[in-house]
Amino acid sequence: VPTEAFHLSPWWTNLWENPVTVQLTHRWLGMLTASFTVWLSLILPKPLKIERLLLGILVGLQMLLGILTLLNHVPTARATFHQLGAWAVFS
Image (cartoon, rainbow, N blue to C red):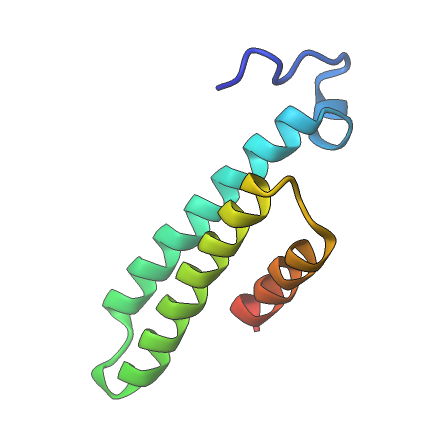
């Protein structure tokens, strides 16, 4: 956990006003989503094999796109595709 996270008072303002806390929360939600996807793919019935594969690919691409977006200092086009990827995953 970065030392700059959760420095603001009251604590809940960190969730939208502290960029470090926002990024930390975003990463953890991404990991939770990826873990949930793996779990979901294990419990879905065998006839849904294509859907499980598609969901896994979408989540993997979403994580890769998010990492690349950060490494390139959040270019608008890539950030927009990351947002569209989130829409596709949750659809």
